[in-house]
Amino acid sequence: MRTLRALIRRQLANRSGAAAAELAMLLPLMILLLFGGFEGGHFIWTQHKLVEAVRNGARYAGRLEVTEVCDGATSIIPPARIAEIKLLTRTGQLDDSAMHPLVPGWGDDAVFVSVDCDAFVDTGIYRELDAAGPVATVAARGVPYPSLFGGLGIFDPGIRMNARASAPVIGL
Image (cartoon, rainbow, N blue to C red; front, side, top):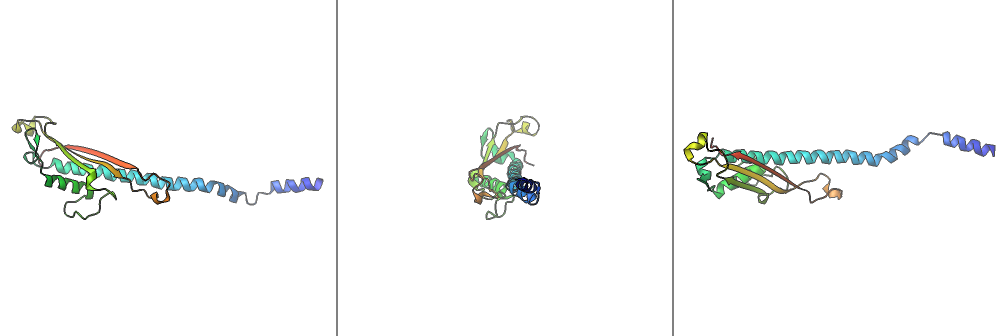
């Protein structure tokens, strides 16, 4: 009986392999944290690209001539200009409609451009128009999030991102 107790004590005191067992228990959690951090950072970066793109589209629309965008309180922005604003918003440039979008999977159908012709102050440069100044709004709605690890089935493939920006049309 004494030998059995001594054998059990020796086995319980034996620490060889303890580090391997601890690593085996912690490795799944460490991998989850690592890849979760990658995915979280990628989401924030992609959302930032989307927000910056709609801001650039709104800035571009704000530099159009007021007379090209509005006739009094009525929006007269030509469809060609709207297409131009959408292309600039999605791709970051005006030349090539075949250019890849800034966010993969982002199409023209998810970019919305509107002009409110009676939304801004009626002072300063707008006094000559005898109306309030226009505000151009560019929005991205329902842009699919291109997950880094979406193919693994861990993350929801239906995540959609939205962004919106407005700028006064001042025609610089």
